[in-house]
Amino acid sequence: MSDATYQHIVEEAQRLFAQKGVTNTTVNDIAVASGKGRRTIYTYFNNKQEIYQAVVSTEANRMYDRLSAVVNKDMPPSEKFESYIEARLECIREVVERNGSLRAEFFHDIWEVERARKKMSIHELDLLKRILDEGVSKGVFIVHDTTVAAFILHSALKGLDVPYILNHFAKVGVERSRMRSLIADFLLYGIMK
Image 1: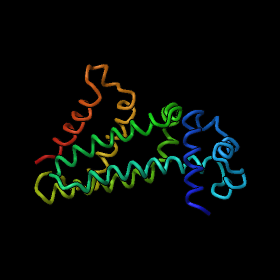
Image 2: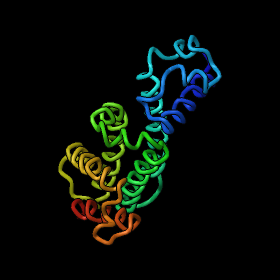
Image 3: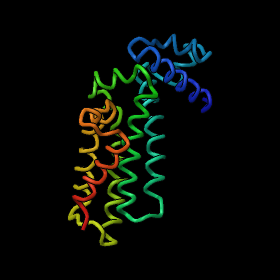
């Protein structure tokens, strides 16, 4: 099996899912768009759900790479924390907006999205914990249990996903870019020494 073929199928599926939605896209549509036969598609995937999971996984990997880059930067933990929050909010918005009609499905079936994001959530918890551990070790953050704090922060961020994507902050006269900064500050000052 070819990695290039697999990736091509996933890219074409993502494009179709974005245009037509997951429900309205068939495996046959993906086969035609990718220039591969249905037999080839089924060599790589058992069903459309697995293709969808591969699309979500590809997006999650992009997000993880971007967030990891923030965590690995040489900067003070407080700046790293703020940069992480801002990057994460933008990543989520970009993923949803890039995927067109998946946006409607994101809001329609949040539980399906949550199942798809499960692996990314584990990675995010680790990244947040690394920032918190660094901040505690440098005497910048007051956090008694970084594992629990990472879980709370991650849960809070997931709760902000939909309002941020839909730009509900405009209702209170705050631009999205300013809101990213306000959210990061609000969360950061709860853990600062």
